[in-house]
Image (spheres, rainbow, N blue to C red):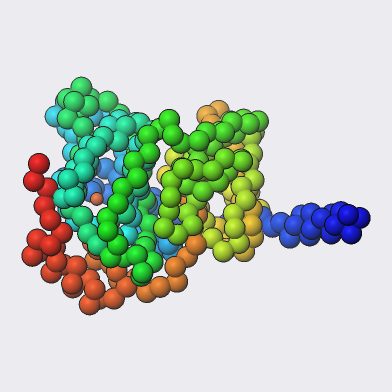
Amino acid sequence: MKQNTTNNQNLVKNETSNAKNRSVLQVTTAKTTLEGEGFVVHRAFPNHSLREFDPFLLLDEMGPIDLSEGEAKGAPDHPHRGFETVTYMIDGVFEHKDSQGHSGKIRAGDVQWMTAGSGVIHSEMPEKEFSQKGGTLHGFQLWVNLPKKDKMMKPRYQDLPADKIPIVQNDGVKVKVIAGESMGKQAVIETRTPIMYLHFTLQPGAKVTQTIPQNYNAFAYVVNGKGLFGDEQKPAHKEQVILFEQDGNKIAIKAPNDTESPLDVLLIAGVPLGEPVARYGPFVMNTEEEIRQAVLDYNSGKMGKIDF
Ligand code: FE2
């Protein structure tokens, strides 16, 4: 017993001495662009300074836009193959339909984790009723790459209503655990490769140190307010994306004392796949040949159609 106690103490000591806060690799600002029928998105990446951040292919902030009557625009029927789309609504209601016969509404606070796999055709539109009434539409779409072995898997959905997403609050910090684990709570979503997707809200002066496995790539996106990031407390603000160095197993985020509004930030991380990426619009495969096949399969109707 004595021996064990000593070993445990050593372990704790070693863990503490090995703990290292990650530094910031780069801070960039999202580019405003139009998607689908012309709805405004702030694209964190890809852009000219960042093509992808393995295993992540894209992060779009949809809106926030105030819809007045008749203005609602969305993304009508379009295909995907080879990756996952993760839709997280902050405000408003999106309606989803696809070639597998699946349909549903994604309301404020809900998450839809769609594994496109071998291919789906879907439409993503502001809900009719919501658009007619008007209101704020605000959400996020993240594209997560699939490993080679899963690119042609059967498409699947995980619909995660807001009330199933664990929330922890402590010392001015609130976290919604969409994927992975934070502040002692585990997400309910199942991911193909290890992914962490956390939504933090920090009151002025609050700070959080999130454990991140050493082998994960990690980035943050500021939804609202201002924050100080990483070991060097690098400042970043709304619509900025912060990439962290891979070296280290903790990420520190702080809301400055002198700020008036809380800091709202997404912290997203995952194990890089380290595989070749061939991408063409809504298809993300490993080779150009597989992209050509995806286009052929789409054009010949093999991905089905939305017929309801
Ligand atoms: Fe889509």
